[in-house]
Length: 104
Length: 231
Image 1 (spheres, each protein chain N blue to C red):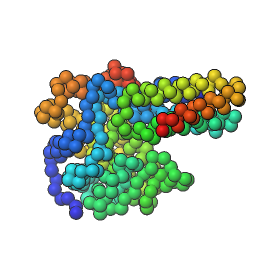
Image 2 (cartoon, rainbow over the protein chains, first blue to last red):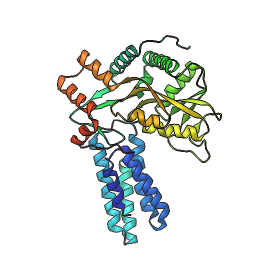
Image 3 (spheres, rainbow over the protein chains, first blue to last red):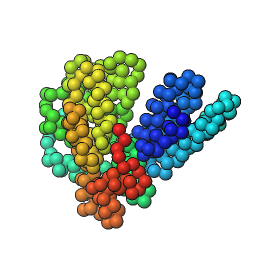
Image 4 (cartoon, each protein chain N blue to C red):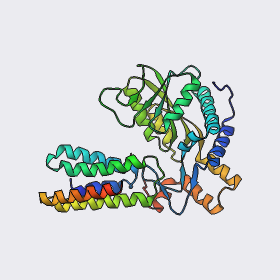
């Protein structure tokens, strides 16, 4: 499974909280199955889980959930592009985590 | 103190809506839709969590809930009251207090291992439990909470909510298929009825809201949301 598949999963399920929950479950399952990519899947899974925790049963607007999906898709694409090079993967992960933390 | 009045359902629904309106818990917004948990775009939103801050309103609603439970579920048919994490917990506590019953709450996710990993509080095996939540849309979370209660060895056949969306015709049958009866105080149809009479919103907004209530999936699709309910 490509990282971008997780972003597509969110989009296909309507960008709602349950869609992010599903993506988080898939990402954490993939982290267990693919030890070499565990950190990348864990970071994406945590990003998706954070969204569902914060907005569960909250009046989230469509613009907020669309923006969260777009940012998740950008992070997934970054990891897909860097996956062949361990050094680039670490750089991408550092950038992604910095972005996530900046929004907290 | 236990309430022993049994107002008509229609009066309870009307008063519930009036109280929700009074504390600004009901929102209509047709230009920038809300997004439900399921991904459904919606022009309506209700925040039942606000109720906990209004003592007279919450007390009245809990009296209504107890009347509904005793009339529709029974007087001696329950052993315990469980709240769904998080919004259901305060309402479950107040209902349990009125009914003189023990209370638990059900976690959204298991904590640790074992068959009662989602239950906080003491829940004896075989107890007949009432699940309490603030609201229900498509019933999905009720089914998950009830499964957790059953996993712990207790029985649950009824769930009480303050507000039921009543916009998906299959909700009650889906719950029934899982052995769950739904009890509620008010629905969006009660809100719409009250809003029309009280003229809380302009007619264009009310027309758009009514379109959504009649065909939520179609309205959602037209406004960039999901056209099926994510499970």
